[in-house]
Image (cartoon, rainbow, N blue to C red):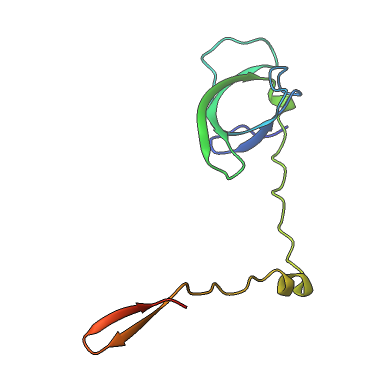
Length: 111
């Protein structure tokens, strides 16, 4: 079981509560010990975390702490192979026109 302390990041799934059909990441602020609960259940205050690691909503959730999971590791980006990287380069942009300086004047010259 995960130690519930401020700042811990957990994944909340259906194992913790039936309401979490879609798992969420949750950063714990505190366990609400002053609220009466059934045995094996707890109220948690914290923030729902998005895929970028930003807090998107403050929530109080009712869960079974034994069902909380550690967060899944973030996917690592694979380097692009050199042969593929060389073919994906774009050609430099072409200039639509050039500027020509004639004496004190700047004249736009079309290609």
